[in-house]
Image 1 (cartoon, rainbow, N blue to C red):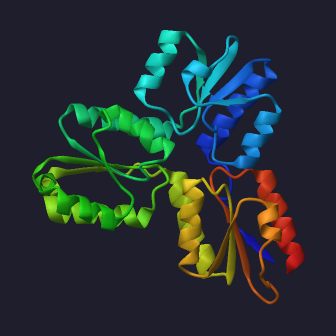
Image 2: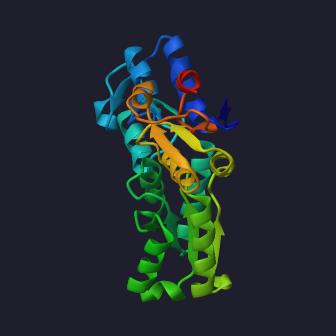
Length: 285
């Protein structure tokens, strides 16, 4: 038997972005996406096969195309360029991401020092940084946060606003908030737990799944931040495998006989891929 996580697969923001593209294609529009619409190679390939182009900038949009802004969001200057050039576009930014952008913009205008818990190279974080003129400090772990404060003593005396990438590790977030309150004092810290509910639910379920099974398979794009965090949480408690496709699974060397097996997936993983992997794992047991 394979124990499948209830929360495995698309979250609202990802499903919405895919639906936006799908509806445009069905309506006969030529579509291009600003970067990969979601972090799933399989979905990106399917959309490419339907004619969706991936572009790196607004200047690459062709006449007659509709530009789709992916679920991760973009920085303000992208909208400025879109309006300047006059490109037709659909904004598929996840509402959770949009809320972070608005909060960061507001607190930055109020003179707060912005700290962002997340991956500085992730498109979501790069977009958020644009709402505070790229002046935020970004950290991905408690160790990195402590290092920031060790190198920049002035931070202890400044009013701080702390937000997180929507897919950030919940446990690291909690320890980071606790650290900041100890170092800066509660009165100087304003934290906005912007980790979305889909992330919280998936991470909590991954922990339970990995504690109640001998082996857990985590399915999703290797470039997916939320999937990687799910895998890391599972690996803390049991043998875990991070696979991107059915081919990855077939290339692994493992023995599932007599073992309890769990299966989960990231928020960018399509249902058809989860079903394929599920069926293959069942055949191994």
